[in-house]
Structures are given as structure tokens and as C-alpha cells.
Image (tube, helix red, strand yellow):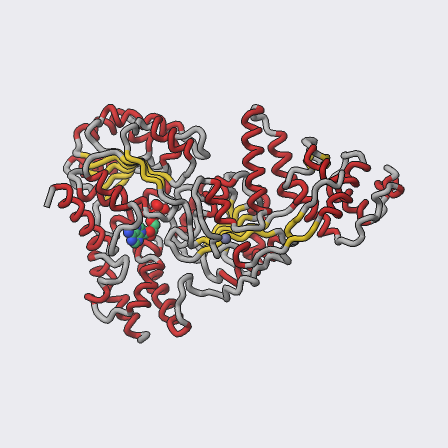
Length: 608
Ligand code: ADP
Ligand code: ZN
């Protein structure tokens, strides 16, 4: 066998014996081979695609230590624990360690006793660390979350810019940069800023087929969320995103009041509380974190079963990234969003009031438009999402709300004309609540004072309910026929686009509001396990989870580090009777077999 062929075989052996997986997924093998041969790689793979193996396996095949640059110190511990659980020699160096710990880790690096070493970029770039690396045998540099080097992206970190020196200082060490951020512009910036000019690019499809997208506009978002959780996610981990800190706290409290296990996470909480809540989220397997967008980057918990948005995200990029935190392990997961008129108004006026320069504002506004377009869409959401990222999905996905439960549309032309002329005749100075009152003919002191009760549009809308009108206004704003004033009072005004409708030259078809969006309508009956497990196997599933929890509590590591849900599901499917059969279960490598095999076999035996 050629040397390359030999190393490629070695990589596969490592995958099977150490990780307990049958085969590489997607482009993993090609990427691994590229790096093993000493070439650079730029890897764009969606969350859950399996990026870690792309640098871990080459670190093991090549001589020396793999240096992994990772932005979040708080998460290094779990990454290292996961590798240690496979009996690999991994460590990190960061500012939380005392001198003695640092010194012994440095020594381990120098004596070649480490397979992988995690460091934050600012640490890596210190003269002392660079000198240490000069003296050590290095297998590769892996730059995780590489989009942090892009100013265009959403997580720019200036320390990442310094990483370009790696190519000059260590010209013979292969570098692999990895990110889940899709767009072309970010990719170009990563390659430039990290001097990865000769790197092979590996771009995977960004589809996350296991995530079901649902967007609705329920009247009571929190109640609808609870119904959704009851129907789909009893006792499972998830994230609920809100826009403001206040709403985060209220929502967490409300979930707890309703018998859920929820904690809050936002930038206004003390660092220690944040850290604790994050840790609990990683360790426990059924905690809900209610958070602002400050939560989630780099969280690689594989069994997040749902991501809820109680507000509209600012862009499709943000939405895709946040929802992408669900279902890293490939098992069925939900991305569920509730939004309403107020979101549209808030976001519009937030953007209008921002101090960003005009060009920046224009870009932000465009992004919001596309996000709104996605929310109001009546066709397959996944097709639209993917096409935004330049991916083509030929057929509707069959796993989003619009595919599963095609929305009804109605001819809203007439109603829209009434609404638009009401805006016009009241002088484009009022907010939606006022306008709806006028349309419904609900007089008030204020309406009388302005004389709008004598106005031709007063009371012309009694055929629809107040809620129907609010929905209609939302859609008119979302489609750009109305715009919201920058004054912060939410006055709505006509745009050029409304003219053809007012003149009767254009008809409008809007989606009928989904009743409630409790989405019990998705007949996905209460699922205890995220995988299709027979009723008769439910007790085994529960028992395996209990055992896993005991072991992980004892070891002080997250449950998934012991075995992830996929592995438990595979145990149920195969029902191994001895350790030879247990070794065939996906995710049971040699070390875990030795460590936990017997205990899990015992539980399986008890249930057969
Ligand atoms: P990413 O970093 O791209 O989000 P991870 O590296 O965390 O993804 O991998 C996601 C999950 O998929 C992990 O649970 C991992 O163990 C699993 N996985 C990765 N590669 C394979 C494979 N070849 N076979 C089976 N499972 C895999
Ligand atoms: Zn679809």
C-alpha cells in the first residue's frame, strides 16, 4: 500500500476502534486525508456535520500534538473531557489555570505526551506559547469557529486576526480552519485573513434535515409554546430565545411556574450565574435555557432537542445559526418560532434609531426584509432557507410546517385597501392599535378629538376581528406596503408599493393566520425518545438514560460524553447480549466498551 493509502487506512481504523463509528460521514474522509498529507483545509460544515473528527483523527495519525484553537475557554473542559473519555491524551492551557498546572501541561506537550492541546487564540499568540510550540512536535493547527476572523461575520474577535502568523512561523505544519457559517463573503475573508491561500475548500450542504421548522403568529406566544413543548418535548433539553433581558427572565419564571425546569441566561447576569446555568445546561439532559442571543456560541451539546424563538431574529443568518444549535446528533429536533406585529415594529424602529452609518443600516434592513419574507412564506421554508445560502433543494422538504400543513391563503385585496386608506385618511400619524379601532368603529376620546369617528373609514372593517386586522397590518408591513415611523411611537405610513393596491391595480393574497400554532396539529404525538422507539422499549430507554446519568454525575461530565442518544438508540435496536455484540453499537469504541460495557449490558439484559 502507498504511504498515503496506509495513513488513510489508519484513519479509518482509529475511527472504528477509538470512536466506535463504522465509517466517515460526507466529506470527513477526504478532509482527514488532506490534513494527514500535510495540506491545509478550509471546512464549512453545518453544525452537527462532524467537524471535530476532521482535526482529531489527523492529530492522532500524524506525529506530534494537534493544537486546537478554540475561542471559548469555558467550553474547553468539556471538549477535553470528551477526548479523555475515549482514553485520548488531551489537555488545555488557559488563564483559569495556576502556574503549576500550566507548567505540567507545557511539559507534557514538550515530551510528546499529548494527542491534542486546546488553547484560546490570545494565549496561543503569547511569545512564551509560540516559543514552546517551536520546541514541540506539532501535528497540525486546527482553527475552530474560524468565522471569528471575519469582520463581515457576526462573531468577530480581533485576537483571531493574529492567527495569520501561524503560516509564516510554522510553514510546514498543516492548518485546518472550520466553521458552520455559510456565506461566500465570510469564506473569502477567512481564507485571506488566515493566509490559507493554498487550502483546499470543503463546502458541505447546509441542510439540516433532522430539524423541523415551524413559524407561527399565535395570539399568545407563551401559551402556544407550552402546548408545543407538551406535545413534543417532555423532559428534553432546549433553548428559548428572547430579545430582551426582561423577557428572558419573565419567560424563565413563567416556565418554572408551569412545571418546567428552566433557567435564564443573559449578559446582565453575574458571570458566576451565567457559568453555572451554562454548565447545568450541558450536564443535565432536560434543562431549558431561556436566553438572549448571548447564549449558544460554541455550545456543542449534541442533544438540544428544540430551539424556540419568541421574537423574530434580525436576519436569516442569525435564525439559521440559532436554530442550528438543535439536533447536532442528527436526531429529530424542532425549530419553532412565534412572532407578531410588535416584533416587526420593534425591529424596524430599532434599526431606524441605530447610529450605524447609512450603508450599514441599508444592509441590516435588507436582512430584516428577507427574514420577514421567510416568516410570511407560504411555501417550503427549507427550500427558501437553503436558497438564501446558495444551496438548492429540488423538492419541498416535507419537514417544515408549510410542507406538513400547507397554509391557506385568502384574497386580502379588499381588506388591505380598507386598511391602507384608513392609514391615509387619518394622516399617517397613528399606530396599529388606533387604526384597528377606527376600522372597527370603536370610538374613544382620542378618536373623537381627532374627528376620526366622522371619517369615511370609521367602522368599515367590522367584518374582521381585531386580531385579523393586526395580522393584516403585520403582513402589510412585512411586505413593505406600510412602513413604521422612526419616532418610536410606531406610526405607520404608506410606501410607494401601496399605490397599485390603493388604485385597484394589484391583488394581494395573504396567509391565513394559523390558529394558535399550538401545533398539536403536527400529530407528532408526545415523544419520549427523540428516536422512533417502540412503546415496549420505552422502559429500556428510560433505564439506559438513568444509568448514563449516574455514570456521568459520578465522573462530573455531561451525560452525552458517556454515550450520546444515538448510541443509546442503537443499543436498543441491536440489544447486544455480550461485549462482542456491544462493540458493534455505533459510538461504542474500545475504551468505552471496557469502561461501561458491562453495566449497560446488564441493564439491557434486565429488560429483555
Ligand atoms: P460539529 O462540530 O460539526 O457541530 P461534531 O463534531 O460535534 O459536529 O459531531 C456531531 C455529532 O456527530 C457528534 O455526536 C459526533 O460524535 C457524531 N459524529 C461525527 N462523525 C461521525 C461519524 N463518522 N459517524 C457517526 N457519528 C459521527
Ligand atoms: Zn418544507
